[in-house]
Amino acid sequence: MVFGKLVAGWHRGTDQAQPATEDAARRRPVRLRSGSRGVAAAGATLVLALAVAACGSSSGSSSGSSSAAPGQADTAAAQAAIAPYTGNPSAFPVTEPLGKKLPAGTKFAFLQCSTTVCGLSAQLIAGAVRAIGGTLSVVNSGATASSSQAAASSLLALKPDVVLISGIDPSQFGGGLKQLSDAGIKVVSISVTQDTKPFGITFNYIGLPTLQLGGTLMADWVIAHKGPTADVVFYGVPELTYSKPMQDAFEQEFAKNCPSCKVRSAPIAVATLGSTAPKTVVTDLQSHPNTSTAVFASSEVASGLPAALKAAGLSPTTIGYAPTPGSLQDIKDGKSTAGLGVDFPVALWTAVDVAARLVLVSRVGSDFLVGV
Image 1 (tube, one colour):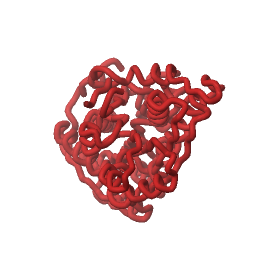
Image 2: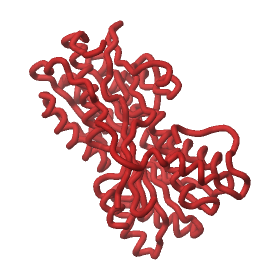
Image 3: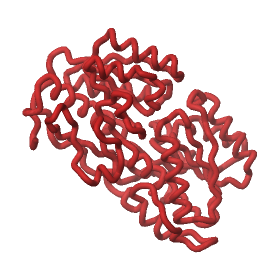
Image 4: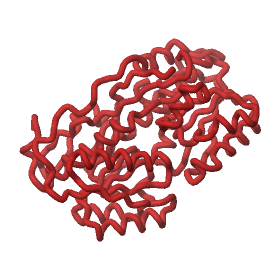
C-alpha cells in the first residue's frame, strides 16, 4: 500500500542576488528578478510524500539540545514530524497561468546527467516544453567533469533561450554555465544546494531547505519506527549536490531525537547507480551485520537492491529520497519498505513553468504577469 500527503516543503527558488536559505525564504516572497522589475514565480513549492509498504520527517534540519533522554528516543516528536506528510494529496502548486504565449521558436535545452532520474527528467521536461509551445534539445552531459563541460560548451552553438540542469554540482560544468549566462541564455537549476550566483544560474528550483527537510523527515521516519534500537547507515552520493546537506540534516535529527541511536554513513559513487551500487550496499551490510536500516540520499542507489538483498539473505528496513517509478513499485510489492517521494511530473513541469516566465520577462516584459 502506498499513501502520502503531498505538501509544500520549505523549498524556495532563488535569483542570482540571494542564495537559497530558509531564513531568506521566510523573510520575503519568492521572486524572479529581471533588472529592477520583480516577477512573481508561480508554483515555487515542492511536494513531498511518504510512501510506505505497510502501516506507517520535521520542517528542516534540527539543531540544539537533545529532546530525548540517553538511551531513549523521542518517538512522539518523530511521529508528529512525519504526520503532516501522510494523508491526501495537496493542490497543484502552480495557480497563475502565463499571461502570454511563448514567442515562436522559443528553445529549451536540458543537460542530462548519467543517472536514471536524469533520463526520467528529460522525458518529463520534453512533455512540459511541448505543452507550453517550445522546442527541446537534450544534450547528454555524462558523469564526468570533462563531458559536462563539453556538453555545456556545445550549447553555445545551439543558442537556446533557456538551459535546465538537475541535481549535479554546477561546478562540474566548470565555467560552462557562466558562459551560457553571459551569452544571454537563462539557466535554471533543479536541486542545487550551493549559492548559484557564481555559476551564472538565473534561478534555482528545489533548494537547500527542502533537501535538508528530506534528510530530517527520513531520520524521523526511522526513529518513529525503530526507536532507540535504531542502527542506521546513510548511503550518500557525493556527486549529487544535495547529498551532503541531506546527510547532515539526517544526522542532526538523530542527535536531537535519538542521541543514543547508532548512525554511520557510506558513499556510493554516482557512476555505479543502476549497475554495481546494489553489490556495494550488500557488501557493506555484510560487513556491518548489526545495521538494521538503510537510508538512501537517492532511491536510485536501491535500484535492483531487493533482489541482491534476497540473494544475500538480508532484510534491512529501507527508505530513500525521491523514489523512481521502479522504486515505488518495489514499495507497493513489499520488496522495499518506504520512500520520501518527490512528485517528479509536478516538480519538473513547474521548473519549465519558471523557465518560461524567465523567457517571457527577457523577451516580452513582466507586465503580463498577474499580481505584479
